[in-house]
Image (cartoon, rainbow, N blue to C red; front, side, top):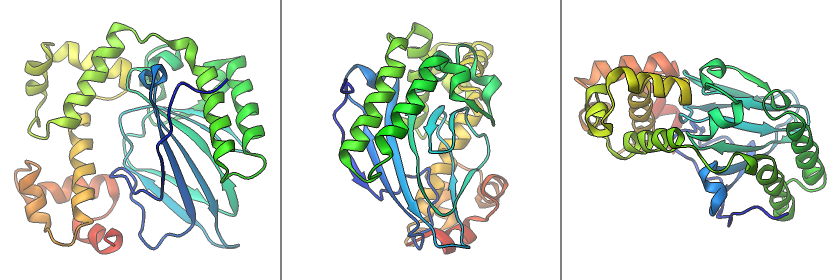
Length: 279
């Protein structure tokens, strides 16, 4: 069965979340946006195919979005909660992965309960999807077993995901609410305090905290901090700006505040990051 989506195929697109070293030629990244009914559950499918010379490693660092992931590789199939810090995956040898980025609403539906239990950890996909998870892993591996660069292989992997996840439709009302919350934070960089989010959503601070914990495994404050760090990383890649200007544009009290937040999560100062990751 074909998935209810129309792929938008892009190669080697560096998203603001992926802190990819511009000198890193270890892999090709294929991404497919989701359309149609399945877009309520899956934002996109991403398929990296890598080849790393013997004895070498290629570390991939991500400031993850506030969503859960499902990832199938030849060796494992896992459901991932959000990594609250910096997510690091080290590539070696040759391989591939076929993963989906769920919507904010979908994590708790797939997990079968609050996703707070999965923050900073992963479980075998069969623990959350049961036999459907086992079938999903088998279908994706069969699809990718030939040429992992093939569009036909990608379409078959995406179809396997659609069949495994379609049973979670339609999204519940609370799920739609958390989708709106995340979209609000992503689209309004002027919202930098939890009380502002309360005013925009009509929720009390306690209700907002509970919603974010159940559906995202995180706090509303984390949502704001993560968006600002992602934007800071994106802007620091452009050598035409300065850390001081980035701090001012993103509403930090001053440049040292940005530096502390950025270094705490990435392990690098803004200056060190720009020197390493700017093209």
